[in-house]
Each structure stands twice: as C-alpha cells, then as structure tokens.
Length: 156
Image (cartoon, rainbow, N blue to C red):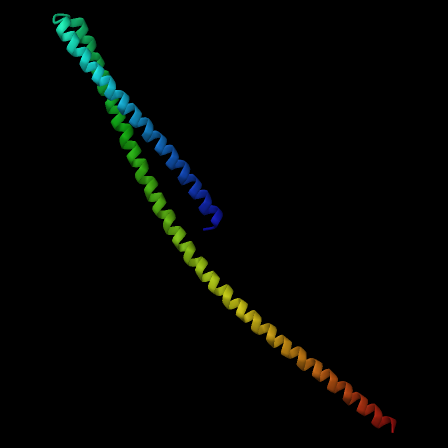
C-alpha cells in the first residue's frame, strides 16, 4: 500500500470519525432536549391532574404526547444503536489500517536495508572500476613503450 493510499484512507477515516462524532453530539442534544421535554411534560401532567381531574380530552392529549415522546425515544435508541454499529465498523477499519501501516513500515525498513547494501555494492564496484582503469592505463603505457622499442629496433 502506498503512502498516498494510506493518506487517502486516513482522510476518509478522519472524515467518518468527524461525521460520527457530529451525529453522536446531535443524538446527545436530542437526548437532552427530550429529557427536558419529558420533565416539562411531567410538570404539565401534575398541573393538569390538579386543575382538571375530569377532563378526558386533556388526558387523551397528554397520552398522545407521551406516545409521541416514546416514539422519539425509540428513534433515539435506534439512532444510538446505529451510531454504535458505525463506530464498531470504523474501529475495525482503523485496526485494519493500523495493520497495513505496520506491514508498510516493515517493508520500508527492509527497503532501507537493501538500499544500504546496494550503496555498499556500488562503492565496491566503483573501486573495482578504478582499479581496472589504473590497470588499463598501465597496460597502455607498457604498450606504448613496447611499440617505441619495436620501432627503434626496426629503425636500427
């Protein structure tokens, strides 16, 4: 996996985490708001019971509001469950990504060792090439002397 791919995955994971965090905050706000509404509802029920014991219409309305609140609580619980599932999946993806990053680090370490070995081999090769060049220069000088000696010998 390349660093660009890792960066891409990390960006996606970060975006998903931010998105999930935002949703969790919204769920918490809804939960708080719902709690406050339930408190107000309880106060209203007490006042209505005191003020109008025989008003069945008002009681029916309160029952309806209570049912509606229960539905909201059920939806909130469902949202919370889905958020937990998403967090679990995100956690799994983060674990997989961490494993991939560990493998990439291992490969990278091996590559560094191979590059060091390659640099060593390159240095040795340069030294051998220098020796060959020296030997070639020496051979050329000897050949020049031999040619001069032969020319002198023929010239005599």
